[in-house]
Image (cartoon, rainbow, N blue to C red; front, side):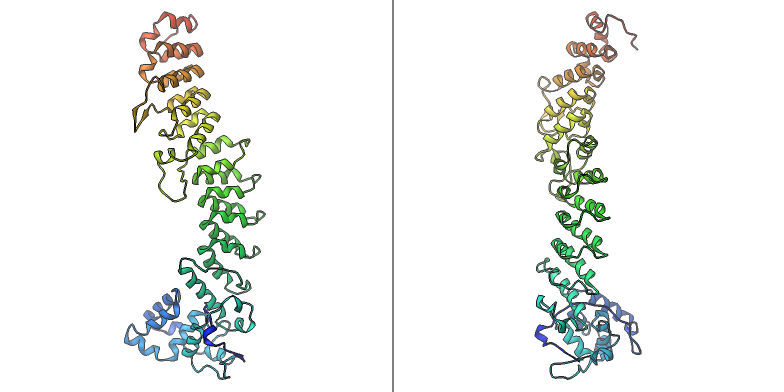
Length: 419
């Protein structure tokens, strides 16, 4: 028989619950006590919570004076390990004086007082204890409850039957623990998603040849768009992953090769997304976006590619005038998306902004005249530039200028049929 370790070196860890054979089982407890017991099992300190149940009412207190209650508690906690009953497990264990444990209550107390450290993980005597796995899991829960301090998978045997449950708690509280999880485990993908959902950067340790790498990467970049730097650029789903990344933070677009055929679409996705410089920090809004470092540069780059992307640019952006000018120079029809007002400063100064923007727009595409504010459709210089580029633009001029002989001459000396 195996000797029990001294109580000062025993450790915690939940294992598997077993079904009683030939004795009263969990389901024989009063329903209200059974419900309370199962809730206590999931607590950070389950042993303490179970003991507290005995003081909650007289009926339960009477049951706690019987070995039946502690036998049920041991089963619920998984303290019997691979054994099926207290009678079976007690024949395998003796205390340090060679005596078997006298009762299920004493067994409960010994198991609950157990605590395992890293040196115990490879100790065969410790690993043979029926409650070894169960107490390790409970210990991990308790460590995680203290702000995740001390949570680690280092030294935890990976062949434990409940290693997956232990690892799940560990990576949810300390994503770095994923580095210690064997990548060939059947549940590695699930554990990796939990880790990158907490810290996107952990995508760096995930093997890139996994069949589920794309799914894991999508979870990672939605947590932190900058995790995109770890995604191979030759993946078939790279563009899809980029869109999720830039929706989290526009900074991710800096990681994307500009020679991609779909770069314009990715720019559009970036501009039209609710960016958060710090993931989860504040709800996105136009002023928040516009104040972010690098936003103006991204906007300029976008409209150089496609002027119509101006429709997605937040108008309070620093140097919005420069962005708008670049947009209409690339595509005059972007004039329809120009915001001629600043919510903070009032109407923009026409001489410095809107007049020049309209003129640049109609020089690029005369038909952009239709999107100019009414005052500027009656401006001789603007209308002249518009009809010089496209004589059909005359139809959008003011009534007065439609009849102007000089402008008609510029339009080609033809009197257009105007409705």
